[in-house]
Length: 60
Image 1 (cartoon, helix red, strand yellow):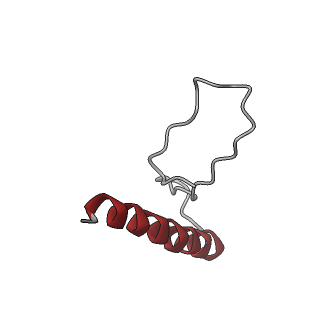
Image 2 (cartoon, one colour):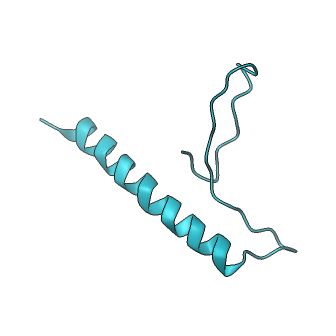
């Protein structure tokens, strides 16, 4: 799972990893309502994971 700024895995092309990112709108192609909803669901999952990482980093 990655955010929309993720560039990619170029150092290991034979790896079978799957990276899930959201859809990104362009100037000439707006997102559909279904794509927006999919991005929203992905963001909810990613936020939960990132909050967990933040808690681990700041735990004392």
